[in-house]
Length: 97
Image (cartoon, rainbow, N blue to C red; front, side):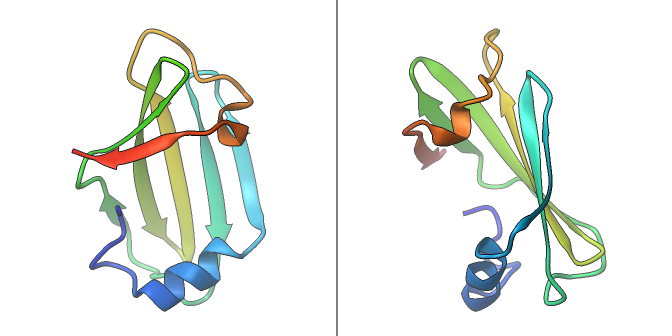
């Protein structure tokens, strides 16, 4: 949803199947970075539409950063709760608002 109009679907599919370069859990959320030559070199921040994840009473937001042939997905809590380390393994309903 966040990269629509920025990355062609075929590029996004290829990148989504790449192995993560880094994964950093912060307690308030996480950063997941993927690298692929077909990603743009210039910095692009994809924060629209507002993408919300909901799971077990926790609401999270997402932002995608593109730069230096890398895609970094940021997931952060919008409530006072922290994001559990197991959040990526949970059933998360994703909606654009």
